Length: 431
Image (cartoon, rainbow, N blue to C red; front, side, top):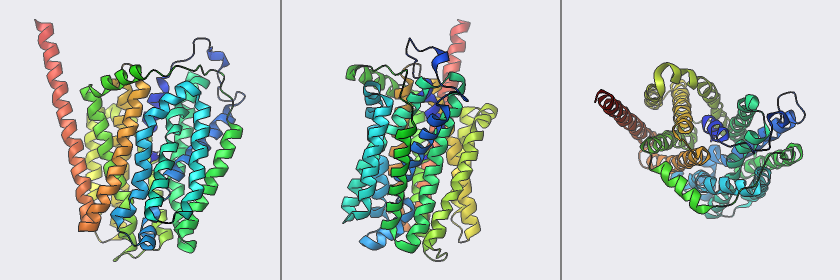
């Protein structure tokens, strides 16, 4: 969920780690106002819209999918978990393929497969077929976050890189939000199949425009596929205690977020609220809060430090979860605002720390974070729905609070480890 994507900081760190080819001079790269910059930015914005509109296209429609196939919330949630799980598994391999075959090639192929599957999704004859199609779609979409930032790092001047990536991230956010809102209103009139079909058509248009607009790469130099080097880099990252903690924190925050937004549609369509599907889809406009909190998280980290920001994010998320237990729509919405703000703040603090912590192979370090992040999304969607099926909304909130407790516990352990390391360094200097 990029903004959801929601992974703005992860994206920037991964991009910043991509080295420039030795013969690429800064003057030959694209900059704002220069030829091709607007086309490039618009192309990647549209790619972001298509990616996240497709990835979460069924999330607002789960009550309708449950009704048609006669399944529980936990069963229907696999249409979300399958897509995010596919992306989590394939984001690292796709990052390797883009090093060998080119960023634009991998992005084009990924979008082509994803939109083709998107046009088949409305015709799924069973829940099993629907989940399988969504898993293939998620695996295909993994080629976008794996390649887009590397493309920008190679083709855009360093000074303009953050703003260029910001437009891609904005596309992620707009796609994730608008996909849910559009499907909600369309499904209210014509059903979930027409709704996901509309998203598929929109994604096709975005994919075609992306391919026409995106300039041919001028600075890409293919590398060799070296599985041993990649495996060694991944092992080194996973053996780093701080990186492991950051990966776990990202997964746990996304467990909360994935569970809440997968199940909230069921709660709001049932008593005592009984909201129509279009209104339920519009609830995802709360994502705009996430865009603001993600953009201000850097200042919060600067004021409180990374661990302080994580404590604040965990507390905000927990407060939102507890507030959402009320049988009052304004209080539930206020709870969703706090959950969203806390999630985006925590995710931004954790993901931005990954690039600073990894001293080499930052692209792979960020890809591992994205994998953990989407594993958390899949787990949250499934476990949160199972808890809702067994214990109602209180069960889903309970799962979220346990995940927040995990974030706080890991952060406390990290704080103690940092203090112990500082003490050892002080003793070493004294000796």
